[in-house]
Length: 526
Image 1 (spheres, rainbow, N blue to C red):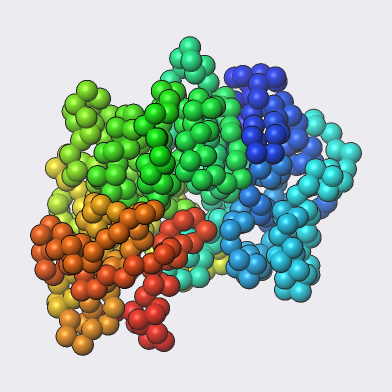
Image 2: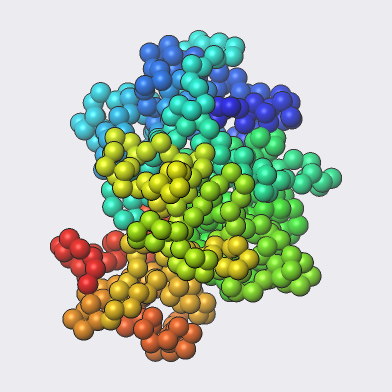
């Protein structure tokens, strides 16, 4: 089944007249019938322009109906889609366009800096402004009769990219089967509930549809969802949209949930329609997660995964609760700190530095084998080989994430392998320290990393971002961590930042924070 199949399933379920998209900011809507017809016409246009299975077509724009309809059209065609993030710099975009061999780019007309740079850096790339007039002119008089694709399920259909938090972003090809891997798992684990109040899902797409939120879209439309598309939204606006549109489904990074908890009077809003608030990208502090469960209801569900492997660990709303009972309140902090359990269709093991599977309870690197695994990094066989491990006849992808499995089969992420700090001969997992710091009142976000130290080799350092209006005494925070984790894991220094550096997906860029201390050293370890 090709990626576009999810739209076709949803269309058959709800019919021509059902609204697929609503953009409340621009005042636009589109029905399932309109989106399906557009995707066929666009796919015919792709072929008419001479683009086929070997060609890469990219999109870059904030969330919007037209941008996403173009994505659907590329998915319908024989070409491969390259999603680019509108929050990236022009230089980053130009680099990816060149390295990923993009032939045509459909871009927001306001991204003039991108267009100007590409005119010099990649003059061979066809640039098409993402306006109705320009896209319609590009499509021409194409029919909306079904487009017959030559692409098979195991052929590469998309080329995404890594987050670039530890270096230059790498291309991550994905097959049609791989693209559908996430919607398949979500359908099995988080089935939407049909009620009189919610006859079909309502999905709030506020995160970039070019990335993880787009995978949620494929799951949502498979079930005939109404998708509320917003270019961007503040936490207060998301609270408003939840109530206004009776949202049942959302994907939110933890930092956005934290911001929503800080919205004045958030407890007074009606969130009764919510069924699933799926969070991922980074762990959520157990204390903040417990409060979110109280404010928004027993609706939080966690996912863990990577572009390279799909989503591989899941924790259901029931598993966030003590004994699975909403009446008993949130589960223990230990459970809330977990990333989830392994679902059907995923083979996940933890291995040591020698590729040996570690015993339960011991930390090891997560290695994954599943249909969601990328065939290999784009034009990078060396990095692909370094990321692969064969255990017992099965080839696994090494994620670089360190975790341990508890007695109930829940996996707990303790760190990125590259983020481990070696101080005084002891291994300190920065994620453990970060969770502790986030439990302290007034901390909105933090990043823990090692800096060079003559005595310890590396000294544990914390960069923190405060909640609005908060004041935190470093001595009190240090004492709090020391009592919880002991002296070895306690930061030797704490630096307050007005805003921590983040990549376009909202992840904190530790490499930028480290750079100030490590300078031009090639090894960022002590």
